[in-house]
Image (cartoon, rainbow, N blue to C red; front, side):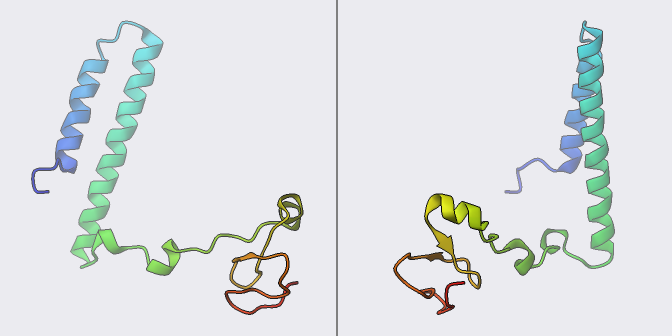
Length: 112
């Protein structure tokens, strides 16, 4: 993975694209493309500075988000959805409930 491009190389690439975009004949297309590229370059600069700041404070920028925040539960469907599909989900664990059972087979919660 050491041969993959880094942020500095990406920023150089964007600068080359900006130089090339300046030669686009259509004024509106040129303006739109330059705006896109300059916005991308600004985001790359912000990202590079943020990573450097985090590293100065001893924080690994790749491990900023806690595992629990990533693994959010899927919200339970609305009753209307359950009625339309003929299926419902457990209010405790969001497992699909079987119509012939009065409880959740996964956690034991009684049907609401």
